[in-house]
Amino acid sequence: MGLPLPISVLDGDVLSFYVAKLAQGQPNSLDTELTGLNEKKDSIISIGALRMCGGRVSLGDSYYRLINPETRMTAESVVIHEITPSEVSEKPDIRTILSEFLSYCGNDVLVGFCASIDMEFLNREAKRILGHTMQNPVLDIFPMFEWVRTKMAVQGGEEINMPFHYKLYDIAKYYGIEVNGGHNAIIDAFITAQIFQRFIPILLEAGIRNVGDVLSLSSKLKGGDRFAVNHGMSNF
Image (cartoon, rainbow, N blue to C red; front, top):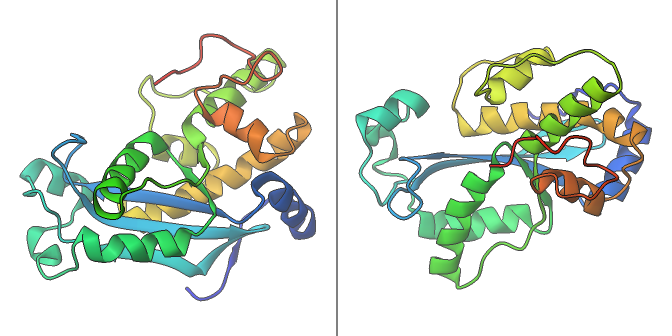
């Protein structure tokens, strides 16, 4: 896993230039696994992240940690992420891991799927432990995909059919991205990175050239008339 994996449909030099303009730093895909979705009571049990560099996902520059949670794990959550209490009982707690993870992220632009959930938990812990939240720009591929779907429909292109409540793996399958080892933070971060790179030629074609434009797409699609091709898009 030390070698970068080429996954882009674009020439690497072109994509490197674009990513530098877009992100003003390296994009960094991330995912967390949790004991549950109650942001006041539940805890992070794993963090996975991967840097993107041009047309590659740098598997050799990855971050993955299991965390001993402060919340008791339930059978329901174990079924989803398949991390058992015995696997994390002797792992570091979030206080030990958090500074290390923030150092890994640096000033990177973070990319996630339904990233508000991950950031809610990460920022809660950052505020509690370090006294401040993360200041990294965050791109969410969920509303970005909704924008792609609508843009294609408006232009008379291929209709992208999805289940009513579609998930990360549904998008991955549409783009022909292999899905193995579901609900593992590092694998989901890898899938997220591949999906994000599938968006890049579409963003270029739409004239989107900087991080502010993409953040407009990623922030519940409140990007003004230039990008708001459909007012009925997902707003979670």
